[in-house]
Length: 138
Image 1 (cartoon, helix red, strand yellow):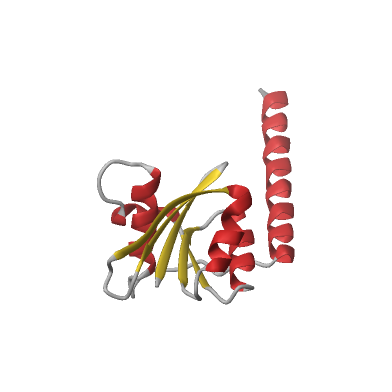
Image 2 (cartoon, one colour; image 1 turned 120 degrees about the vertical axis):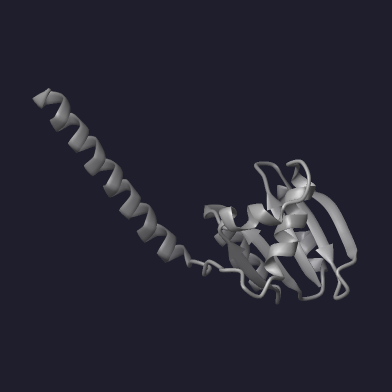
């Protein structure tokens, strides 16, 4: 089974297909119930668009025996059919994760995400300093 999950602020949309690419799951799940719903499924391949929260969910799903692959959103966009809505996005993610040539993002540990946040804060501070120096000079 392959599962595509479109993440949102309060709800997630799940789209699952079997080995013959027939839809077997189409469901909206609230944030607090997502882990419980995914834990009920047999081990499968799960695809999500890469973002800060997706790394957390990937670590959680992996503990339940699922294989989780994260993809950059710009690579998933080409697989979304029809108008943009949450179910179409989840279907596109499900389609993209099954492609052999898709590029994936490695799942980051909590420590790696912490270091990345520090680098981004430093980059913002340097940008602010440069802006201030240019404003004073101007």
